[in-house]
Image 1: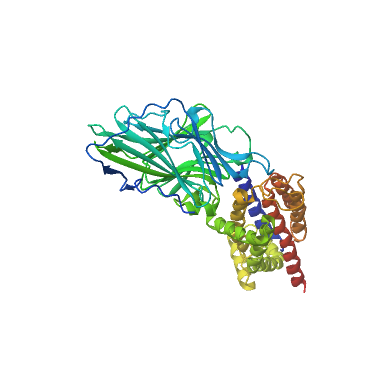
Image 2: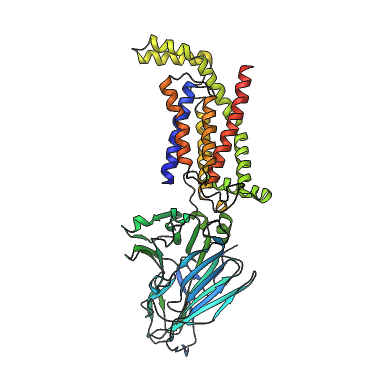
Length: 527
């Protein structure tokens, strides 16, 4: 929906530019896995154990129990059933702009089939849903602290299986290590699976679910698979996988590879209003008297560029800012820079809009001057069109001579305006998908720059400024064409009614600055 709206804007601006050109006069580093949990050359680490190794013979857990891990950033509730994650709540983010509304939950499940990070060791006798022994009842971490949570069981084949989560009080990153010790007399082989179900129909219709789906980086390329397409067709990735997970508009939950620990990712519909991602390791062989470890990283947190970059693994690529992301991401960084000083993202938007307008003054001035020169030639061009109306080739040749004689570039008025489009589109995407604007107030009645203006005041003002801008631009269009162009502000106003207030603010301020600039240039031309 948003991409179609953006395309409509681009096409409308293109049409407006062409008409104007021809007819007018003057737009924290990742949590590291424990030392033993390393892979080399895509092979699980094998550590010899004494020949008389004693593998603990654990009794089956009597019943599943919950273990709560809390940091200053999140609360995570794990369960001893499949050593899985049943709830993950972000403390610093709420579902609505009301600070007293419920906190954002990236995982919230009560059905054991849908717990996140379920484990299975295919070929080792460790099945999904198995009951584990937990090493702790729960704990709370502060900044600077690290802690481990271990889940263990012994399989019927004599394999001692340990699943270790590593937490840091400073990070949204979590380490995950599988450790397999073979206390039997025969080699054991198989693969490790980490299973992540994802709800296709959110329980609550919050705006962050406007864009959600599976995201995977493989072969240094981001693959975004929308929920509706996954419901029809499964996806499989099996080459050079950096990470895989699920994301909505503002948040990401992902499993990252440590030294090629992800061999395949299968994402499929499970027909229970869920899609399921199965992340599989390379083949693992554990010889008698040997311990093998396979390590992963995880991230459950906001799609904040700085936070994700600190985690590594190119997680920041999950923030897809469209065709011109190479421009959009620096603009977003500049926006955050100004916020540090003004402490208001609305003011930061106004500042960056002003800077962009100033940077484009030379281009805009050149564009308007060129269009003014073209307007002066309109009578002579009309004469040539009438004279050679039956001979297009002769008319084009005469037009070229006219341009050359008067030193006018026919593209001089259009190209400078078109060059600005990538910047406008990049900033559009940066404001549309930036978590920084989410629930960020501006002033007066605008309490959330990522939500629409509740009273539609700014979109109406934006449309009015666009109308005034066009009225200040004299044209030689006939009445029908003039009415068509005057209808453009109405189209934009309707489209912007439900756009984020931050985006409307940018467009409105840009229009106001354009009006001031055009007034000044027109005054210079008259003088």
